[in-house]
Length: 177
Image 1: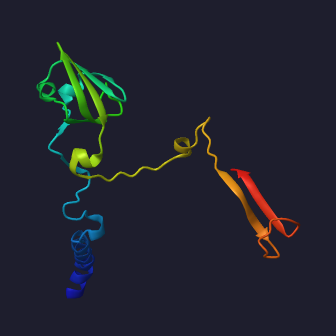
Image 2 (image 1 turned 30 degrees about the horizontal axis):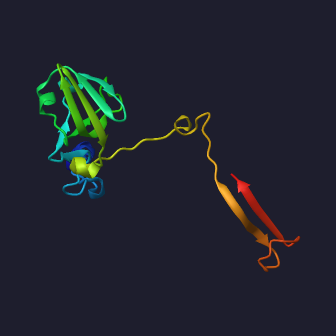
Image 3 (image 1 turned 180 degrees about the vertical axis):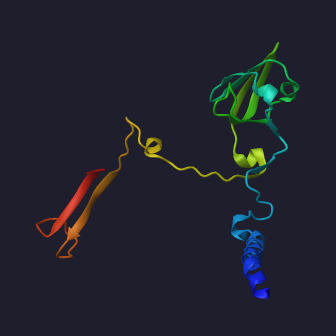
């Protein structure tokens, strides 16, 4: 009778034991970020302003030296020369931007900023991010783009070892790749 009970409940007990053992598996510590190095975290510098959504909606022009906002938000009123502005992707800024304000003109509801490039170390007290992307051939091959390098004349092969590039004992190569 006891053997019959074990035969019926043994597989169930074994399955529960396996589930309990595997559900308590500790994550691989190599996958965990080091303390203070959380994936995708940032601490803005004291002069950096992260453009909020209402302000981002007022962006009308972004080029290499100028940003124009047309509208009025509380955040726009806080902008000042020397401040660093950071904006993610927005309708008026399809690539986002990270710039320092050189001059600021405010007329009516139009804010025109003349800006200059800024480094990450100036804009952030700390910045940690992790991004993986798989590239396809379309990402790397484009029509009209080429690569070239010019090589000086150098010895490819010198069968007699004399370092002389002349004669049938040596082959040389120069040109472009």
